[in-house]
Length: 178
Image (cartoon, rainbow, N blue to C red):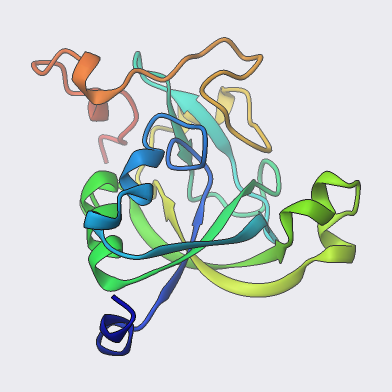
């Protein structure tokens, strides 16, 4: 397995939504058949972004509006090109979400859980994050979150793809008509 890492250099990604551990789509990144993924720690974006939950399927979106919203907390992984392709497919990059390289603070999970701040325990790194660039301005009126959980106190449980109406295009609820 490791010999393939020399052929396929690793890419650092920041995951903030349904791909995190304990979330509905984490099985994609946990499945070794999809490629290599190594959890590095918790991450927090250095720049603020709006993280909203939208559509009738309660999908988390980070909107391309830097400086607005919150520094987003998520997970940082190193992945190989095979896993990156699987992530791109799920996120429909570049047709829907766009994978953008951003600065994040990467910190050991145990230090953050012990009360340390990202600013004290973290180190700056670059990671790719999936951002929605072309969105309806009305999404900016939604509550903006620092972190996401499908089971969060917001009460907006994520609808997995197999539960969705295949004839309904949820993209129309969030994409700008421009």
